[in-house]
Amino acid sequence: MDKYLEKLTKSGICSHTSLLEPLDYVEDPKLVYEAVYSSHPDWNSRINAIKTANYPKVVDFEGRAWDLIPQFVKDKVSKQALEDISENCDTEKPVKTVSDEELSEIIEHENYWYQYAPYFQRDILEFDYNECIPNPTFELSDKTRTIINKFNSAKRDYDNARALRRNSDVKKAIYNGVVYKTSQLPMEIIKTEYEEQIKFAQIIDKSICEYAMSNVTDIKFIKEAYRRLFYAQNFLSSFDSLVIEQQNATINILNNSNSDTNIHQYATIRNSLEKFNKLLLKYGISNIDKELFELSAPENAINCVKEYNRYCHTMFDGDSISGKAINLVMNTCYWVRDVHVNMLSDAKMTVIDACLGRIENKSLS
Image 1 (cartoon, rainbow, N blue to C red):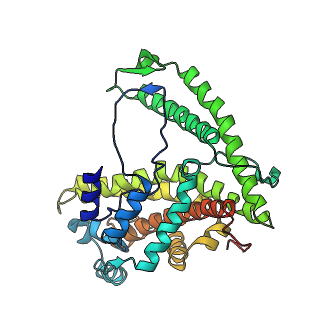
Image 2 (image 1 turned 120 degrees about the vertical axis):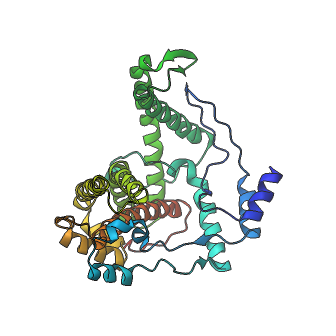
Image 3 (image 1 turned 135 degrees about the horizontal axis):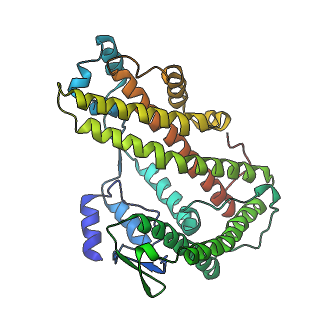
């Protein structure tokens, strides 16, 4: 453990190091098909490591799409398009370092979050928050923690079982101590267990809502937070599984394209971009709640989506691929996801702050 912290302190906190892991929170799934062991420093050790390490750094990724465009695609782009992209793509922006004051706020923010991490580090089960009434009796306890533990375990079992049924590389799995061929896993039993645990976990999620309501004078404030939470949660569910998956596939194709003469390669890029654009339009733009988006989004995001709406149906027409079109579709995808991720996080933190009595009545907008 000490060696791990020493290494962590010397190298600084990597961008992928999660401060939100419920470190003392162990799940016990019944379905086992692979043994994975890992260890982590405790919460206070992580905070001390942050304080003594180099500050985390945040890089501005504006315009990153330009770097992904292969040269043979750039050769087919008009001079004006190149100039437009060049003006809006600064790929050498300086790295911003977090100040002492900002770091202190981050640590406090994460520490409060950590108390509720087991409950909010997942999709909150939907319920009718309009039926909720303030109830100050809820408290975090070993019992509530165990309920969420069992739910997470059952969900993991169910998700993994479905994945294993489609995975021909894994031949056997153990469920509840019994060895099965993956094609013969008892799916109905696994599904029933998951559905049973949903009922208990949903009661906890609803109780947290009612407890948050008890700490504000206007319960409409908490209801609005849950409206945004469930909207952003549902939006990101399909967006991440379909749009982001296709975006990553498109980026891989662009990264691996280095020929300026391969016609087949050019067709592959065009097909991938067109598919990406259609999915972004169908599962992103078309599903946006305009009111909530414009209340939560920065001006750059709103302007980007407006520009995308003007060109989305024609941006890949013709016999060449416009660099401006590639940049626009990439940036739109980035902004749409970023706005909804922040909306979801802010809504969850609003509920947490209310539960901790750290909130004053104010408009979420």
